[in-house]
Amino acid sequence: MAFLSLSLWRQAVRSLIRRPAFLLAVTLTLALSTAVTAAMAALVDTVLLKPLPFPDPERLVTVFEASPSVNARVSLVAPARLDDWQRRSTSFEALSGSYGENVTDTGGREPEQLAAVRVAPRFFDVYARPPLAGRYFTDDEEQLTGPGAAVISEGLWQRRYGRADGALGQRLLIAGQPVTIVGIVSDTFDQARGTDVWLPARIPPGLMRVRAARFLRGIGRLKPGVSVEAAAGEMAAVQAGLAREFPETDDGWSVTLRPLAEARTAGARRGLVILLGSVALLWLIAVANVAGLMVMQTTRRLREVAVRLSLGASVSQAAATIAAEGVAIAALGGAAGAVGAAWLVRLMPAVLVRTPRIEELVFDWRAAALVVASGVIAAVGCGVLPALAAVGRTESLLQSAGPRGGVGGRHRLQRAAVVLQVALSLAILASAAVLLRAYYRLEQAAPGFDARGAITFRVAARWDEDRAAIGRLQASLLSRLRDLPQVTGVGMTSFLPATGATLRTQVTVDGIVGPDEGGRMTVGSRIVDGGYPRPSARR
Image 1 (cartoon, one colour):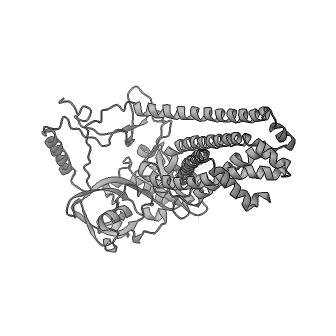
Image 2 (cartoon, one colour):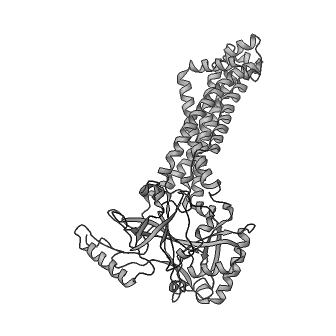
């Protein structure tokens, strides 16, 4: 009960106030380490552990084709094949797809380029989440000749319309065609980061017959009770039937299903876990350092404690006096760390813009619980353990307060603290060195091209636009750019370098046998013009 005494805590606070330098040093150490650790834990929790912000998120899966190569590399989905899957499978409550493009809205005072996502029917049914306002597309609006309609993001709603209710019903003018805003979705919606507007894909019949045109990102919602494994088994059987029906384009191709949460965070998982481990080691070192300082502070006060024991104080009372100081320091450092963690969490979305699900990051009760848990651990390490080590045995303590000044016991504690700190320091230094070396090599790696002075832009068109006219527009645009005195070279490509985007096609090469039964292999390809490989030829 000594630990519940108010006088004990008043004494501990007065003792710490008399040592301001020590109090400031240990509090800042704990506060900084707690803030960084809690913020990183909140990031990892949001990205890797929290369920996606949709009803029954475990039923959401990505659906891709897998090429008939040895590595079975996943590929985008052809609209015709997606349509076949929808009609022949029974595992999905909804199955759809999408692809991204840039569009230009010319309906305002000035043209504005918008990041758009073209969606196949039932796309929003997959996510089963209502819009912020308005509605999603009707069946008529998804038809090739249906009325123009658009769903905009919360960001565009805020930027252009100031969140006014009157945004619904406003019109955008895209490729000369008016489209009416019928709905608004939250920025936490999947794919909303960087997306301004969703439009119906409206894939023409001619393209639906081209089974090798793979450009949709497949997404599906499984029916209740259907596992990913069971759905994958059914889709394998469906695709096997398509391979027999369309051997030229479907033979050897398979279907890959992955939980959406796993697919969205796969690229960030390893780095975040390593970073969290490194930060946690830093926190352990901070606690060990504070604990070591507390032990050294305690050894300087052994005579004081010995006198209290000699005057009749119990061992528990003496231990409580020392432990209260450590607990008070842990509480103060934890409180300051919580404030720092909340600030870091608010800062992270502006810095880690490419991290998946970063828009969902908040300092919530889970992060606060981690701060409390770390404070408890710090209290034990910085208060309870030093106290028990100092007054574990009354006789030993009284002897250590004698003329020799407690050399043996004190030095053993100090040596143990030093060994612990050195071991933890070496571990974190080794981890930090590996991370820094990897980051340095990544930064120094040659990309294979010189991007200095390069400017990129896109020319987009609808499926039903005159391709010859679009081609003439592109050729005229490139010609006029080459004539500018400030331009040293002009090139064109279907996909920019280092984006990972490519067209996946099957080829056969004379003299080389591919990995599939027909000797074919799947390769990635990009379309370029003559100026693309050497845009600086005029230098």
